[in-house]
Image 1 (tube, rainbow, N blue to C red):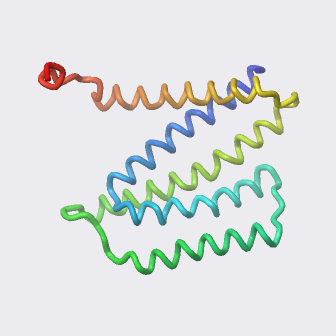
Image 2 (cartoon, rainbow, N blue to C red; image 1 turned 120 degrees about the vertical axis):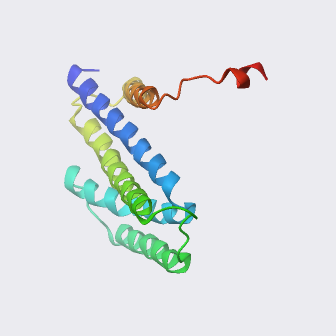
Length: 164
């Protein structure tokens, strides 16, 4: 793995960590049904970024599939109604909505970015290279999550729970 590929892979790993955070935060503020509908927009984001980054061409079948899946999510949205969790303010709901939509958009960017990384590697895409890229990405996602847990004091141990 070249240093250039390593740096790009590390950046994608950090973006994946941010995406995981945004998704988890939105999931904590929204009902599952709303979160699922918002995450369904990832398809449109992925298609758009694939078109822009890797010059993906669309066939009638792929466009039809995107339209049907997006329309299906829209039909579900009409039946969802207002299912805001009890005691949650409008501000928290909106923040959850926005972060979940950002998570869908960011993941829609990450998938074509990985494909672009493989195209720009200028080397044979071997099993070893794929594993190296996955390992580096996972390492940087773990670093991102660990730093977040340190900031949030998630490593403090409750002695009572350990003794049980």
